[in-house]
Amino acid sequence: MSKADPPGRRVLRQAVREQRRDLTVGAVLGMGHQTGEALVPVLIGLAIDEGVVDGDVPGLLLWLGVLALVYVGLSFSFRWSARAGERAALTTAHRLRTAVVSRVLAPEGEADGNRLPGELANVATEDAKRVGAVMMALIVGIASATGLVVGAVVLLRVSLVLGLLVLLGTPLLLWLTHLVSKPLERRSETEQERAARASGVAADLVAGLRVLKGIGAEPAAVARYRRISGRSLDATLRAARAEAWQNGVVTLLTGVFLAVIALVGGRLAARGDIGVGELVSSVALALFLIGPLSEFSWVNAELAQGRASAGRIASVLDAPRAVSPAAGEGRTGLAATPGGLPLRLREVAYGSLRGLELDVAAGETVGVVTTDPADASALLHCLGRRADPDAGRVELDGTELSALDLTELRASLLVAEHDADLFEGTLLENVTAAAPDATAPGAPSAPPPATAPLSARLTAVLTASATDEVVRTLPEGGDTAVTARGHSLSGGQRQRVALARALAADAPVLVLHEPTTAVDAVTEVRIATGIKEIRAGRTTVLVTNSAALLTVTDRVVLLDGGRVAASGDHEDLVHACAPYRTAVLA
Image (cartoon, rainbow, N blue to C red; front, top):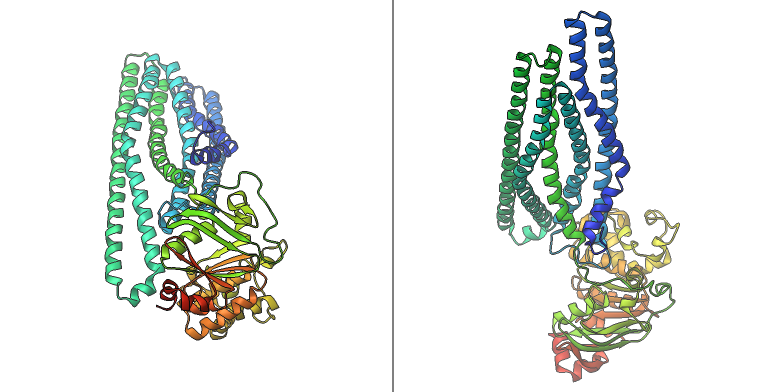
């Protein structure tokens, strides 16, 4: 394997190599099973020759006894070969699912490739399952090839003509089978892509059902899904037609091939070149060959679908990363640093930012106001290291972000965007998800029940974010179940819980993006005061145009045209800077 291979191909190859033991066991047992199957007609022919033709009863009993033993071996080998194959298939699918999910969740990001979440879920489930099924197909293919070889050798011993007919005709038949599987491979890939798209759109529409109902857009949403689902159905039907056409052609070719074998064997028996028992064995072997040849048709279909799915998995694993990990081990221990950390941007150019210079001292609370939302988005991307600047550098405590381990960086510099999703679980589980005591070794994975007193830190977080009001209004308080993405809560409730989660993380540097857009003015003032108090001594950056939040900052920076246009106290800027006044008060 070349080191230059894309990561997707390396992962796929590694997944196969890790199943070598099960593949070997399954293949050996499968080969034994097919060998026994091929020998059954031979044993029947010997029993006929000795017991029927020659009248040798002891000989007949002997071969019948051997035949019984062979059937016992057939039962054992089939069972354990199938077990090894299933284990290899399921384990491979599991490893590929893990690889896809790990890539999607990797700190470097950008694995989605503009795919909807439902599409990625389809890749991690259905495509991984299809690639896993290739393990079983390999075992079946090897076993079937063994059966064909043994059958051909036996036929060679019976008749050179019959043996050569099988040995020469089988490769031709397999080549024709491979050719007719090509349309199935192409259509299977299209089928999976469109099925994944339909699944993704369905999940997206269900997630936004409340919004759709609120604006009366259900008919448009239904029409959209109907179109996409119709395309998926068309692709599925085309793939099914391709598979049916392949099976039909392969069955026809197999039937013709076996008929030729039976015809040649019958003519040889009629001329006396082979005996009665040998004729029975030859015909029975021809009938036996239907099994391996039919299995080759199934194997080809599984391989075609597996190749298509492997390509889709590789496209996710090979997706270019938004940022590269630190070249070395990187600096550690930042997240455990007491107090805040200094943050600096030096001549940063990215997106709409143009040579941005910004210094935030350790423990300082700085507001950032933007006249263009694109400036805020670009700044958040750079601070959260979702992308690296095109020019310039971002430093945390004197170390460039690109030199820091991504996991350590995001525990030390937390960027909490205003549209952050919640996850399925209780409200308190959402709040404490990233809290230091929730991730420490040996710490409980879930918060204490509502009947137990909350810690002083958690109480302070709930109060600062005004989430305590949310807790009091819910039927089960903090133990109230929250659905995926927090859709069981109102917009304002979701926003406060997300803010509480960010505050509970207690990161040395916290960047909050418009954390109060969905709350009323009174609550906004309360939250502003709470943020100021709970973040005392820690570095905080508020990217917002909210006057209530900007009032509690130590200073405010105005970004205009991608650069710092003004800096100072909020009240002073309101009176002295027209662009600032427009951005904040308009």
